[in-house]
Image 1: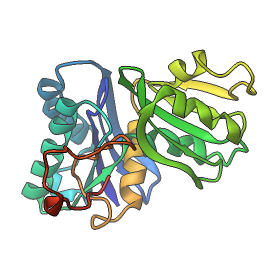
Image 2: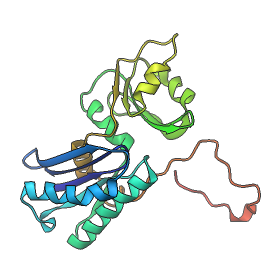
Image 3: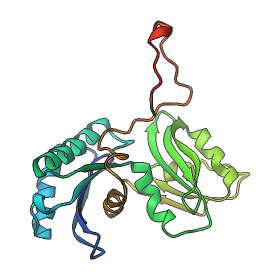
Length: 232
């Protein structure tokens, strides 16, 4: 399977082409940036496609990060992925940034739990916790940093993500220290591609992945009869 992967969710702009049958990256490029994703992405995609020697019609699917992340950045990547998918007649699939951060650690089958965390500012983080085997321990959520730190109870974790350093600095003194603090501005684009190859277009659509705070409540002004369950 030939996968074009795109990531503009956080403080980087990245793209790569993966050949899953050959188990190799045909081309990749990543640039750290806080702004300017819209201007940088399409030329970057053109370069990696040229380096891979492929046309968009040769691709089997397009994978893109869906969040959590910057609203503007997410829209840039998602729009590009959907546009290429539509033009090439290929499916676009979504990969969450938290999953992309955790995946390379889980692939090592270590003994430590993995906390993937993204800075949401205002003393909050987007985070999820999985076991070393990938078993879910805490589902993805937006929560105060204190809630993420409460995951010390699962044992010394491998912290990963752009908020890994924040959690490491504030780790509870009474708890065993983290096994690893792996601060990364963005996930490895190669893992976005591999995850994109593994998911199904039906279960992993290329659309924004939004997380709400666990205690979010509807407006009191909203009539009870209009309330509908919503997916996180």
